[in-house]
Image (cartoon, rainbow, N blue to C red; front, top):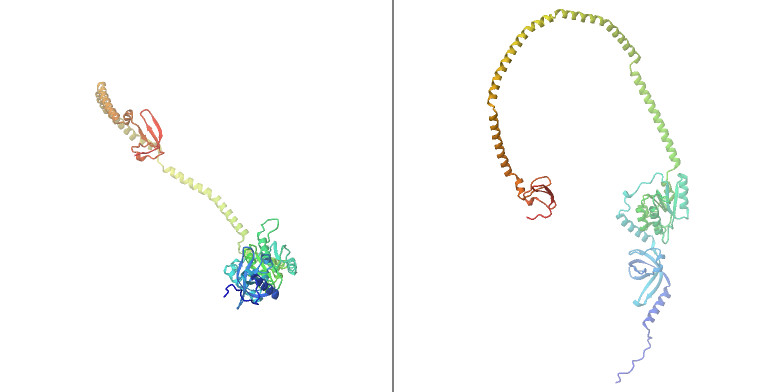
Length: 476
């Protein structure tokens, strides 16, 4: 048997791997071309290169999809896991992995139900963060000087707002034109709200006192820019009071929950923004009339009360006349009573004078006892002085010069003994022997090193003087 015999011939064609991959690719692209695929987004990944990778799935299958970086800006919406969409693109294969995939260049929500589900899911998440809380709402200014408007420059919305404000109460308007639907509309609206909020007070461009974000009616897809998370967060973060007027009265978007007031239409937003000048004038006239009537009634009531008070007052001229008459009567009676009073007082004085004793005789009678007492006192004083003179003589006889000198010597000897004793116990003798007296700043003598701290001021007293010193190192 020959082991090197060739294998039997076969009529099955032979292909290279790349040939099979290319044939499959051409078949898929030629068969399907540009198609629309409906499914739920899953496994979404935004690669660092800018490309987006995800899968479209339904109950029975899953299709890989990719969005190239060059087409991401024209996609229409940003892919999110769990959102049902309709993706438009073309089927192709990826030969290196033997997979097929959908090259997507357009994505849109799959019907109104998917849109509503996505909006509701975002609403619940933002509500949980507190962006829709009632205590975040601010009061609108009564009469704003500057009103900022974020809307499309085309269409009737801007004209309706201008006309309504001009009719009710003309104000200065600042318009930030934006696209209100389509690609990039949400980003432009969010930037416009943040741009108005960033204007400084007193700058070249006046800062609005009120913002109106408005657009006309449309389908749910047309209004999706106002359901975007970036727009809702910009409205919630805006420090300027904001009115949302998106769509018709039955339309509700997420910006309505984040704004300070929601208007059913753009015209209604303009009516909320400014009061009616005619209504203000009528209200002012009514208040003026009420005020004038109240003042008139107050004057009438005050006049009536004053009249009643006047009637209750006494007759002042009559009171003055009666008082004047009583004064005249009292003056006349006083004029008549003074001479009688003086005569009575004179009579009483004469009667008292006659009853008084003779002053000269009284003095003579008192003088004799005084003379006797004076003579007795003089004799006693002379006798006392004579007795004291004898005592002084005896004391002077004992105080001779010899006795005085003897007493002085005794006192000097005693004083010298005390001085020697004092000198023996004095510290000055110790200083003469070479010792030093150490004292602190207050003069207190220091006898222990423990009482001295480094840096303390010291005084060193020698026998012939004192030196100031400072402790540097204390060693036990």
